[in-house]
Amino acid sequence: MKDPTSMGEVFLADPPGTAQPALPTRTRSWAVCGIAAAVLGLVTIVVSMGLWDPDLDYSDPTAIANRLSDAKGQLIVMHVAMLTGMVGLVIFGLGLARRLGGALPSGSLIGGVAASGIGLTAVANLIGSGLDTEFLFAAEVVEKDVPETIAFYNHWIATIPWLWVGAGLAGVAIAVAALKHHAAPRWIGIVGATLGGLTLLVGISPLQYMAGFVGPIWLLVTAIGFAVGDKAYRNAAA
Image (cartoon, rainbow, N blue to C red; front, top):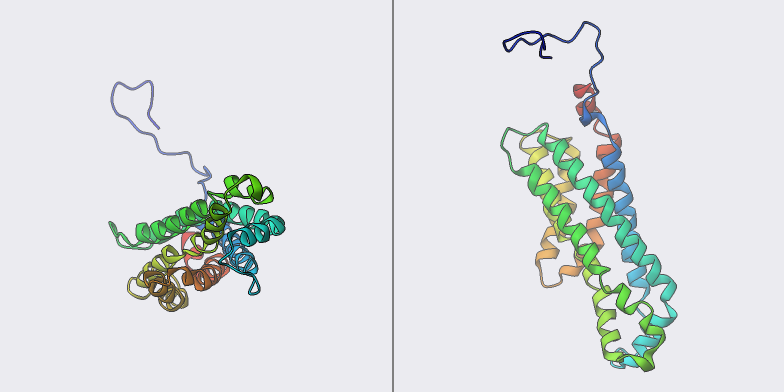
Protein backbone atom coordinates (compact mmCIF):
# COMPACT_ATOMS: atom_id res chain seq x y z
CA MET A 1 0.00 0.00 0.00
CA LYS A 2 1.44 3.37 -0.98
CA ASP A 3 1.73 6.04 1.69
CA PRO A 4 -0.10 9.12 0.30
CA THR A 5 1.85 11.45 2.63
CA SER A 6 5.21 10.41 1.25
CA MET A 7 6.96 12.07 -1.68
CA GLY A 8 8.65 8.79 -2.63
CA GLU A 9 7.64 5.26 -3.51
CA VAL A 10 7.08 4.11 0.07
CA PHE A 11 5.11 0.87 0.49
CA LEU A 12 3.71 -0.32 3.77
CA ALA A 13 3.21 -3.98 4.59
CA ASP A 14 -0.32 -5.27 5.25
CA PRO A 15 -1.16 -5.10 8.96
CA PRO A 16 -0.60 -8.31 10.92
CA GLY A 17 -3.59 -10.59 10.90
CA THR A 18 -4.96 -9.30 7.59
CA ALA A 19 -6.89 -12.14 5.95
CA GLN A 20 -5.52 -13.27 2.63
CA PRO A 21 -7.94 -14.42 -0.09
CA ALA A 22 -8.08 -18.15 -0.69
CA LEU A 23 -6.18 -19.35 -3.70
CA PRO A 24 -8.54 -19.85 -6.66
CA THR A 25 -7.00 -23.22 -7.44
CA ARG A 26 -8.79 -24.69 -4.44
CA THR A 27 -12.23 -24.15 -5.95
CA ARG A 28 -13.81 -27.07 -7.77
CA SER A 29 -16.84 -25.44 -9.41
CA TRP A 30 -15.14 -25.59 -12.82
CA ALA A 31 -14.75 -29.37 -12.46
CA VAL A 32 -18.41 -29.70 -11.45
CA CYS A 33 -19.30 -27.81 -14.63
CA GLY A 34 -17.27 -30.41 -16.51
CA ILE A 35 -19.31 -33.20 -14.91
CA ALA A 36 -22.53 -31.47 -15.93
CA ALA A 37 -21.24 -30.92 -19.48
CA ALA A 38 -20.30 -34.60 -19.77
CA VAL A 39 -23.72 -35.76 -18.60
CA LEU A 40 -25.42 -33.36 -21.01
CA GLY A 41 -23.12 -34.59 -23.76
CA LEU A 42 -24.24 -38.15 -23.08
CA VAL A 43 -27.87 -36.99 -23.14
CA THR A 44 -27.23 -35.38 -26.53
CA ILE A 45 -25.70 -38.55 -27.95
CA VAL A 46 -28.45 -40.80 -26.57
CA VAL A 47 -31.21 -38.56 -27.93
CA SER A 48 -29.46 -38.31 -31.29
CA MET A 49 -29.22 -42.11 -31.47
CA GLY A 50 -32.89 -42.36 -30.54
CA LEU A 51 -33.83 -40.35 -33.62
CA TRP A 52 -32.65 -43.21 -35.84
CA ASP A 53 -35.51 -45.36 -37.06
CA PRO A 54 -34.37 -48.63 -38.73
CA ASP A 55 -37.79 -49.02 -40.36
CA LEU A 56 -37.72 -45.58 -41.97
CA ASP A 57 -37.01 -45.20 -45.67
CA TYR A 58 -34.11 -42.73 -45.56
CA SER A 59 -34.30 -42.28 -49.32
CA ASP A 60 -37.65 -40.54 -48.85
CA PRO A 61 -37.17 -36.91 -47.71
CA THR A 62 -40.86 -36.53 -46.85
CA ALA A 63 -40.74 -39.57 -44.57
CA ILE A 64 -37.68 -38.13 -42.83
CA ALA A 65 -39.42 -34.78 -42.33
CA ASN A 66 -42.50 -36.47 -40.89
CA ARG A 67 -40.29 -38.52 -38.54
CA LEU A 68 -38.62 -35.35 -37.24
CA SER A 69 -42.04 -33.75 -36.78
CA ASP A 70 -43.04 -36.61 -34.50
CA ALA A 71 -39.77 -36.26 -32.57
CA LYS A 72 -40.07 -32.55 -31.79
CA GLY A 73 -39.91 -33.16 -28.04
CA GLN A 74 -36.68 -35.11 -28.42
CA LEU A 75 -35.22 -32.38 -30.60
CA ILE A 76 -35.99 -29.74 -27.97
CA VAL A 77 -34.31 -31.85 -25.27
CA MET A 78 -31.29 -32.30 -27.52
CA HIS A 79 -31.10 -28.57 -28.24
CA VAL A 80 -31.22 -27.59 -24.56
CA ALA A 81 -28.68 -30.27 -23.63
CA MET A 82 -26.23 -29.14 -26.32
CA LEU A 83 -26.40 -25.45 -25.44
CA THR A 84 -26.30 -25.96 -21.68
CA GLY A 85 -23.45 -28.39 -22.11
CA MET A 86 -21.62 -25.83 -24.22
CA VAL A 87 -21.68 -23.38 -21.31
CA GLY A 88 -20.32 -26.04 -18.97
CA LEU A 89 -17.56 -26.92 -21.43
CA VAL A 90 -16.38 -23.32 -21.65
CA ILE A 91 -16.16 -23.01 -17.86
CA PHE A 92 -14.45 -26.38 -17.53
CA GLY A 93 -11.93 -25.50 -20.23
CA LEU A 94 -10.95 -22.26 -18.54
CA GLY A 95 -10.72 -23.94 -15.14
CA LEU A 96 -8.62 -26.72 -16.63
CA ALA A 97 -6.19 -24.21 -18.12
CA ARG A 98 -5.85 -22.50 -14.73
CA ARG A 99 -5.45 -25.80 -12.89
CA LEU A 100 -2.74 -27.14 -15.20
CA GLY A 101 -1.04 -23.77 -15.53
CA GLY A 102 -0.49 -23.71 -11.79
CA ALA A 103 1.49 -26.95 -11.90
CA LEU A 104 3.22 -26.94 -15.29
CA PRO A 105 6.58 -25.33 -16.06
CA SER A 106 6.39 -21.64 -16.83
CA GLY A 107 5.59 -20.99 -20.48
CA SER A 108 4.20 -24.47 -21.14
CA LEU A 109 1.57 -24.69 -23.89
CA ILE A 110 -0.06 -27.84 -22.52
CA GLY A 111 -2.72 -26.06 -20.47
CA GLY A 112 -3.66 -23.90 -23.44
CA VAL A 113 -3.84 -26.93 -25.74
CA ALA A 114 -6.13 -28.73 -23.29
CA ALA A 115 -8.40 -25.71 -22.93
CA SER A 116 -8.48 -25.23 -26.71
CA GLY A 117 -9.57 -28.83 -27.20
CA ILE A 118 -12.45 -28.34 -24.78
CA GLY A 119 -13.27 -25.08 -26.54
CA LEU A 120 -13.45 -26.84 -29.91
CA THR A 121 -15.92 -29.31 -28.43
CA ALA A 122 -18.01 -26.42 -27.12
CA VAL A 123 -18.03 -24.89 -30.60
CA ALA A 124 -19.15 -28.22 -32.09
CA ASN A 125 -22.10 -28.19 -29.67
CA LEU A 126 -22.95 -24.63 -30.62
CA ILE A 127 -22.76 -25.31 -34.36
CA GLY A 128 -24.60 -28.60 -33.92
CA SER A 129 -27.59 -26.72 -32.54
CA GLY A 130 -27.27 -23.90 -35.05
CA LEU A 131 -29.98 -25.12 -37.43
CA ASP A 132 -32.53 -25.92 -34.73
CA THR A 133 -34.26 -22.55 -34.96
CA GLU A 134 -34.66 -22.95 -38.71
CA PHE A 135 -35.85 -26.55 -38.84
CA LEU A 136 -37.14 -27.60 -35.43
CA PHE A 137 -40.68 -26.40 -36.13
CA ALA A 138 -40.46 -26.36 -39.92
CA ALA A 139 -40.72 -30.15 -39.92
CA GLU A 140 -44.36 -29.74 -38.88
CA VAL A 141 -45.25 -27.95 -42.13
CA VAL A 142 -43.61 -30.14 -44.71
CA GLU A 143 -45.97 -28.98 -47.41
CA LYS A 144 -44.61 -25.44 -47.07
CA ASP A 145 -40.94 -26.43 -46.96
CA VAL A 146 -38.69 -28.46 -49.20
CA PRO A 147 -38.50 -31.95 -47.61
CA GLU A 148 -34.95 -32.37 -48.92
CA THR A 149 -33.73 -29.50 -46.76
CA ILE A 150 -35.32 -31.05 -43.68
CA ALA A 151 -33.65 -34.33 -44.60
CA PHE A 152 -30.33 -32.46 -44.64
CA TYR A 153 -31.11 -31.18 -41.15
CA ASN A 154 -31.50 -34.81 -40.07
CA HIS A 155 -27.94 -35.52 -41.25
CA TRP A 156 -26.71 -32.38 -39.47
CA ILE A 157 -28.02 -33.28 -36.03
CA ALA A 158 -26.86 -36.86 -36.48
CA THR A 159 -23.25 -35.80 -37.11
CA ILE A 160 -22.14 -32.37 -35.86
CA PRO A 161 -23.02 -32.85 -32.15
CA TRP A 162 -20.89 -36.01 -32.22
CA LEU A 163 -17.68 -34.15 -33.08
CA TRP A 164 -15.84 -34.61 -29.78
CA VAL A 165 -12.38 -34.81 -31.30
CA GLY A 166 -11.38 -31.66 -29.40
CA ALA A 167 -12.03 -33.49 -26.13
CA GLY A 168 -9.60 -36.16 -27.31
CA LEU A 169 -6.96 -33.49 -27.85
CA ALA A 170 -7.58 -32.21 -24.34
CA GLY A 171 -7.30 -35.73 -22.93
CA VAL A 172 -3.93 -36.32 -24.58
CA ALA A 173 -2.69 -32.93 -23.36
CA ILE A 174 -3.71 -33.82 -19.80
CA ALA A 175 -1.94 -37.16 -20.19
CA VAL A 176 1.29 -35.36 -21.07
CA ALA A 177 0.82 -32.94 -18.18
CA ALA A 178 0.21 -35.75 -15.70
CA LEU A 179 2.60 -38.44 -16.86
CA LYS A 180 5.52 -36.27 -17.92
CA HIS A 181 5.27 -33.19 -15.71
CA HIS A 182 3.31 -34.65 -12.74
CA ALA A 183 0.91 -31.71 -13.03
CA ALA A 184 -2.18 -33.86 -12.37
CA PRO A 185 -2.93 -37.21 -10.71
CA ARG A 186 -1.32 -40.07 -12.60
CA TRP A 187 -4.56 -42.00 -13.02
CA ILE A 188 -6.17 -38.98 -14.70
CA GLY A 189 -3.23 -38.97 -17.08
CA ILE A 190 -3.78 -42.65 -17.85
CA VAL A 191 -7.46 -41.99 -18.54
CA GLY A 192 -6.43 -39.14 -20.83
CA ALA A 193 -3.97 -41.36 -22.69
CA THR A 194 -6.52 -44.17 -23.18
CA LEU A 195 -10.00 -42.67 -23.52
CA GLY A 196 -8.68 -39.31 -24.69
CA GLY A 197 -6.28 -40.92 -27.12
CA LEU A 198 -9.05 -43.15 -28.51
CA THR A 199 -11.34 -40.13 -28.89
CA LEU A 200 -8.61 -38.28 -30.77
CA LEU A 201 -7.85 -41.23 -33.06
CA VAL A 202 -11.45 -41.91 -34.08
CA GLY A 203 -12.03 -38.18 -34.41
CA ILE A 204 -9.15 -37.90 -36.86
CA SER A 205 -10.46 -40.86 -38.85
CA PRO A 206 -13.12 -40.46 -41.58
CA LEU A 207 -15.60 -41.85 -39.04
CA GLN A 208 -14.97 -38.79 -36.89
CA TYR A 209 -18.48 -38.68 -35.46
CA MET A 210 -17.66 -41.86 -33.51
CA ALA A 211 -15.67 -39.65 -31.13
CA GLY A 212 -19.06 -38.83 -29.64
CA PHE A 213 -19.23 -42.33 -28.15
CA VAL A 214 -16.03 -41.93 -26.13
CA GLY A 215 -15.47 -38.20 -25.60
CA PRO A 216 -18.26 -37.57 -23.08
CA ILE A 217 -17.18 -40.62 -21.05
CA TRP A 218 -13.59 -39.34 -20.94
CA LEU A 219 -14.84 -35.93 -19.82
CA LEU A 220 -17.07 -37.41 -17.13
CA VAL A 221 -14.30 -39.52 -15.59
CA THR A 222 -11.76 -36.69 -15.83
CA ALA A 223 -14.04 -34.02 -14.40
CA ILE A 224 -15.02 -36.28 -11.50
CA GLY A 225 -11.32 -36.90 -10.93
CA PHE A 226 -10.52 -33.21 -10.68
CA ALA A 227 -13.59 -32.56 -8.53
CA VAL A 228 -13.05 -35.25 -5.90
CA GLY A 229 -9.70 -36.92 -6.60
CA ASP A 230 -7.29 -34.01 -6.80
CA LYS A 231 -6.78 -33.62 -3.07
CA ALA A 232 -2.99 -33.44 -3.11
CA TYR A 233 -3.03 -30.38 -5.34
CA ARG A 234 -5.80 -28.66 -3.36
CA ASN A 235 -3.96 -29.34 -0.10
CA ALA A 236 -0.77 -27.90 -1.56
CA ALA A 237 -2.68 -24.77 -2.57
CA ALA A 238 -4.18 -24.35 0.88
